[in-house]
Image 1 (tube, rainbow, N blue to C red):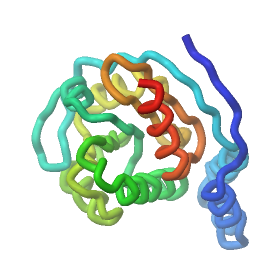
Image 2 (cartoon, one colour):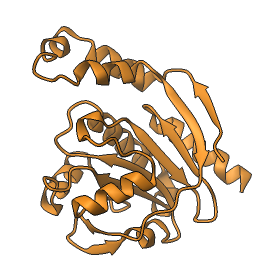
Image 3 (cartoon, one colour):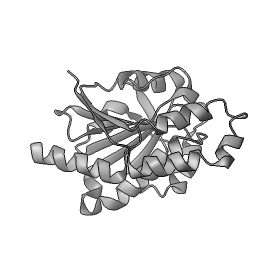
Length: 208
């Protein structure tokens, strides 16, 4: 069962839209056939919905090189904030990763109770070493972990959370939140801010 509600464009989305609409960005359109596609997505605001997703029984590699079970990582007792990224992305992933970085700073005393999860959709390039450098770039703390693995495992994870688009260049910004394994997932399509995500957590805790 899925419900959704349209929200207004966030301040971060507006800021990013202005940035992407700069003369410099337009100058790169010829080199990046997806630039206009990304810009239009940024203009669309966000959509919030709830859904029941079941993590597939696949193994992924964390950025520390450890092979782990995805269901075990998502069901370790912490609340989860999940997104899908790839490290060579220049439009969507830097924005969503910056939001995760800001969220981690805003969690305060709850930081150890929330597991931030970023799964690569380009596992052939995004080795654990590459992910470690990416994590360092965004100041990822202990509670924010990055995952890669085989192409099949990555696709299985993307399909399970209904984010698979067939081509990494066609991916869209999606953030998924869940308070605990017995609760539904909150899905936000579009660019949510760190404050938006904190608000979702407040609402989930209040409804517990």
